[in-house]
Length: 195
Image (cartoon, rainbow, N blue to C red; front, side, top):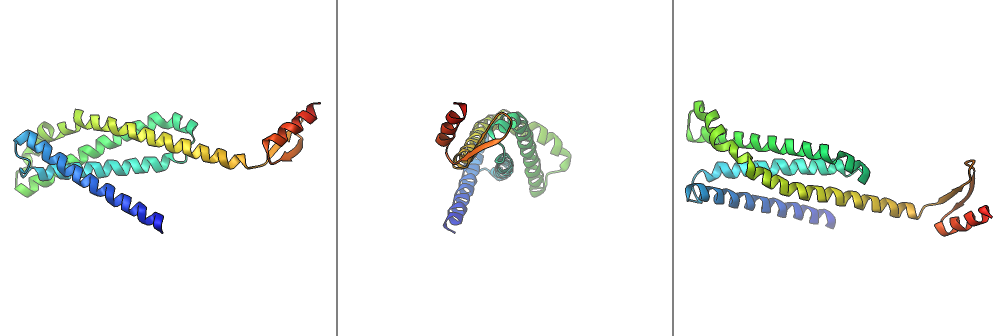
């Protein structure tokens, strides 16, 4: 129960951090563009950043849960396809979030939708360009580290489980000569058998 509460508190803390970060980043972006961090266009920028962070965060959790069952060797083979899937998914999520928040903004201010596609292409979608890929690269480094760390941890746990198990001594014909609980006893049996 205590572990569940600490996990819930961790998610709550992460969610609050993402919320504050998105609001701060939206205000900073609008301050750089308009000179006013409290400009009304902070709202769609904040919504875009929040949808993007939530969508990409969900994608990361999905890919991490899927990759937890892989060994290190499998992880090495699947790393490039997983990263490509991550990049494509993250780009799609970012562009959809931008398009959705821009459409909502057009509805809220009563702007005609005849200008929507031009406005989206000229002003909004460049956000998913270089700056987005810089952050995506930073998070990819963290993503790869977490995948690698989980894989190493899983293999270490499997090694520890197998270390306490029985060891079989088999001759060249495949006949089991002895079952021994420790590797030292197997070495002693090998010396006996070879002499």
